[in-house]
Length: 284
Image (cartoon, rainbow, N blue to C red; front, side, top):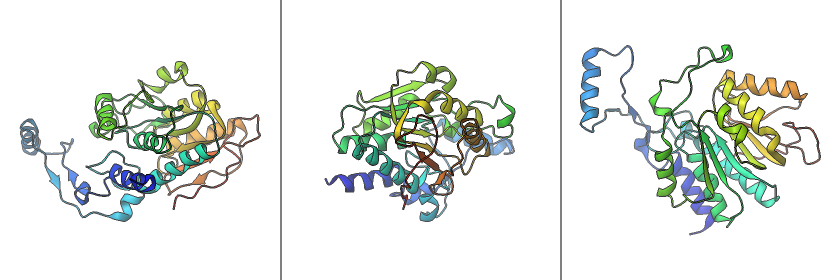
């Protein structure tokens, strides 16, 4: 199969774009639900059944990651995955040194894509790192994250075994895929990561974003990409990035991807670790 066609189909598969039923909304127990409905759902789940609310497929929403697919491996939408593909292909073409990492992987879709791009280009000397608790998001511990508690959201708690199984389904689970299981503050300081060509952050919270920048940003090579998935959607994430830029004296604007994601490419000739000097990569 042609490499371009393979990647295009893979991206649509990863975000559930090929499956209209991926827009159906699973009905899960929630705090305000009546006891009878909770008991019904619990009984159905124990018997292997689930209930869904039928919703029409909205292609425009899926392009920008505005809905969470019930079928698929990524919630970030077509635009951000297409942009990620372009970033990976750019660092390969420009011979930017380093591995690829995503911090906060959920079902693993973005990392599956990065590994697939390496496979298409027959790249054997780079690894794809997946850093995640594989238990969902932590409960907020800082005031900056107050009001943004998703720690009880079971949808976001995808086990490392499930993510490995997803890689295996695509034939992409090998020794170039490396897992860092645990909270970022515990795993990233001692991770055996040398240089990075791609740093993709999807940690949502202030603390998670801050920790990733502190521990990994200086490992990003000149002309490497730093991608922040939640910059335009999660105020705590944006605050962490903005404060990091302020501490480093970075004044140039961040490039928008689709209203939610943002990115920067490090300058080619700069001794300062900064999110500056990027030539725009289109996400169209």
